[in-house]
Image 1 (cartoon, rainbow, N blue to C red):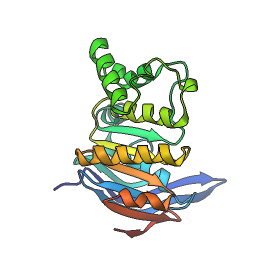
Image 2: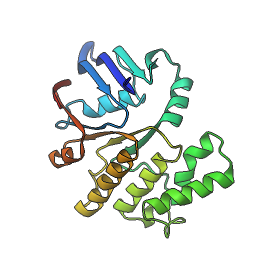
Image 3: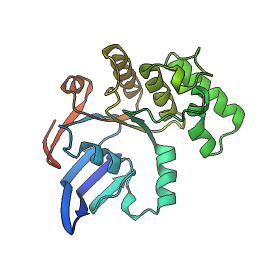
Image 4: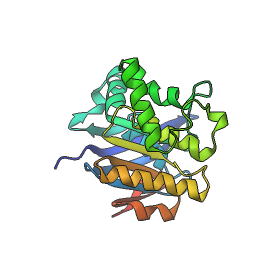
Length: 225
């Protein structure tokens, strides 16, 4: 089986006062369809940068990123955006909901971007919010929802365009233990239904959800399993 994401000798560097600061070095990684990959490492290890490169939100300084057999490093920005919109869903620690929009409108937004009809988008947004237990919060704006509820909206939004891959960066970082467990159990549930999950965390307890684990330290993969 071909990997859905493959990184080949990926490096990420920044120039700071004429010197190279290396964030990632010599990253070689394959993610197969249906994996629940947990990327674990301390703050500043480069794990979030790694996820952003895998999700085409950032570019490597060197190396190749191959998604579904296509070399993403050769894509222009429009092609990358189109690819992300169809193939990937994102969940972040800070939720990143639009504060002036209701839960329904936030979930509907990715569908609006790819021109799904208003009727179909609303119906799917309702279904997804019901799936995460928020059928009674459709018209609530983020400031009227708890942190756990906001993250549920964010997960529903990530699923809006039926992506194959969900990338989650510290999705439980701002949640209490009960809300965090809901999020992780839900991600495991959709993983069992065939979604590929890539999750970044510093919480060791979350590796229990993984089918494979990599440890990142000082910009390098130091251990995998």
